[in-house]
Amino acid sequence: MNQFRDVNYLKIRWTSGTQDYVLEHLEPGQFPVLSLTPTYGRIWAAVTFEDICHLIKRNRGIYEILKPDLKRKVYFDVEQSTLSLNQVKEIILKRFPNARMHISGHEGSWHVTLFNYFAKDLESTLDIVRKFAEENGFDKGVYTKNRNFKCINQCKRSQPVQAYVEVSKVLHKHLALHDFDDDAIDIDTLDFGYTDKEAEGKTTKEKTSLDVLSIPQHDLPVPEHYDCLHAKPLDNLPSCLIHFVHREGRQS
Image (cartoon, rainbow, N blue to C red; front, side, top):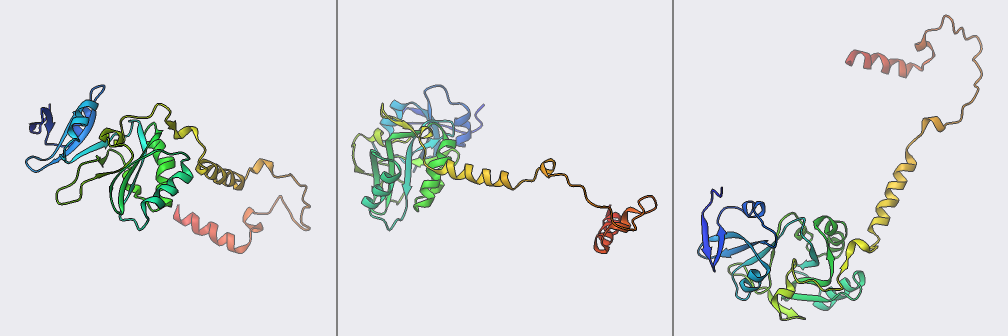
């Protein structure tokens, strides 16, 4: 049972509680969204693709909630960057050849969604895209669980609108969770170099481990004047080790 207040807003049922309630009650074909409203504050809803297309036609403070198990386009958030937009695009193209980019935002702050590259879930995004973003000074914080990702044509109060910049003026083409190209490439099928480095590190670590049974056996000479029948084990240890053994014995 929803213990929070329900809100009827724009012919959609919203909750003013937490997004967890919406996430737990999603039905097939529904997607979670957040709206920042002047009247109700933060409210959440489970909507269809058709709903979200309608919602983002006007500025209603709409955010996609990037649920971890949902397929998503490769996306980047470039915040307060000293790079020009052309430099940002060049950086992306070096790692994602022939990337087709929908871009929204304003000078020095852009959302870039690649509509011909996708990740099947958050985990795939973390392995490749977050590392790439971190290396190039993009915001790596947008790859967290249930991230709220601002939609095109939306804004927080008193902040600039996430305005159209390049490519399609069809707003839903800029969404992270919707409208993938038919020829979009799953980034898990590509070699971006990160896996090789990790495998190399793992191999190096494995090589440093010691297999005692692999040590060659040697026949060592018995010391002169050594009486094995009457000697005590500690008599054959260096004095520093004898001290260590006695000390550890007192601690146990």
